[in-house]
Each structure stands twice: as C-alpha cells, then as structure tokens.
Length: 170
Ligand code: FEO
Image 1: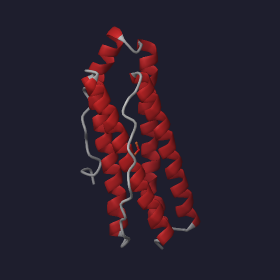
Image 2: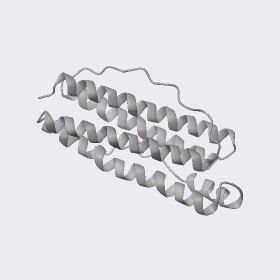
Image 3: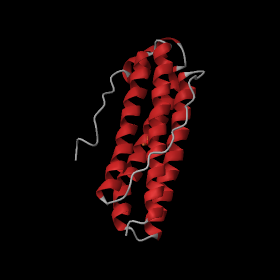
C-alpha cells in the first residue's frame, strides 16, 4: 500500500532534488562568471539531471494515485573560493542525498511497500555514480591544482559533458 507517510516522504525528496538542481545551477553560474565554461557546463548538465530525478519521483507519485505537493526550495550558496571547494561541496551534498534515499528505502521496507522499494532501487544505484563522479573530479583537481594549466585542461574535459535524460530511456 502507498501510505500518506510514504507520499509525504517522496514529496520531500522531490524538494531535495529540486534543491540539488538549484545548487548545481548556482555553481554553474559562479564558474561561468569566472570564465571556466567547461566547469559551468558540467554543473549545468548535473542540474538538468537533478530535474529528471525530481520528475521521476513526481511521475511515480501520480502514477500510483498520490498527490504531488511542491515544497519551497531554499536559496543556494552563490560563491565558491575554488573549483576544488565546489566539487567537495557537491560530493558532501551527494552523500546527504544518498542518506535520504537510504532512509526512504528503510521506510518502504518497514511499510512493506514493495512498489516503492523497487522504484527506489534505481536511485540507490544512481547515488553510487553520483558520489563517484564528484569524488573523481575532486581527486583530479588535487593532482592538477586549482589554477593554471591543470585547471584549464580539466575545464576543457568537463566541457565535453552532454546531458542525456534518464527519463527518455524508459
Ligand atoms: Fe539526484 Fe545528485 O542526486
């Protein structure tokens, strides 16, 4: 059964995903203003991914006859001292999101809501990738430095990222 508590928790997660999009788009705007267009591109693609995460949950609630309630989204930070700090913040944020999905999964299991449990498995797996990609970039910046040639090369690499909607694959 799809309980009101489960619907409430999933609506809260929609808010978390929209905040994630806001946070990453804010990082994108910051690095665009610093003329690091590749890093700006990477975060902008990430923001779009977060929107698809929100809509996946949104569609699931509606499909199961629940009511979506959109909650207020907080204003994100808008300045970062360095690219390393922004990616470290992104990694910490993804760890927080992983904990959110772990809690949602616990709730679905406690409520014996198997449809939600199976639905959440996609996100649990996705979070492994989300943490790994932020962590990999933090390590690359640590090796190449926050300035100069190394950062220019990384900016070029991150400029290659293209948005592919996971909603379109279904
Ligand atoms: Fe929607 Fe980055 O997790």
